[in-house]
Image (cartoon, rainbow, N blue to C red; front, side, top):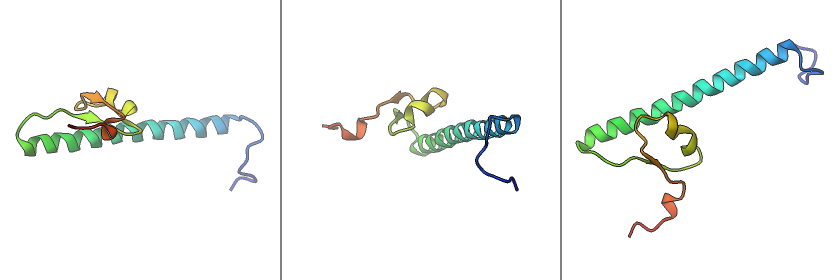
Length: 83
């Protein structure tokens, strides 16, 4: 156990720790994108027909460029009139 959780300097140990956290974060982001693509693929297969895939929500702008199934991003879609 370290003597303190608050680092006194930007040591090599601190840099390695930050790099590991960053790597885990980016892998998690790619896993989430794969999860979304998997769900969309299964839904499209079950429907048996082509459907337009639009991403909404806070992470849509981050996920869409990496996604193989998302065609468009519209962060305000749920607020629009579908009329």
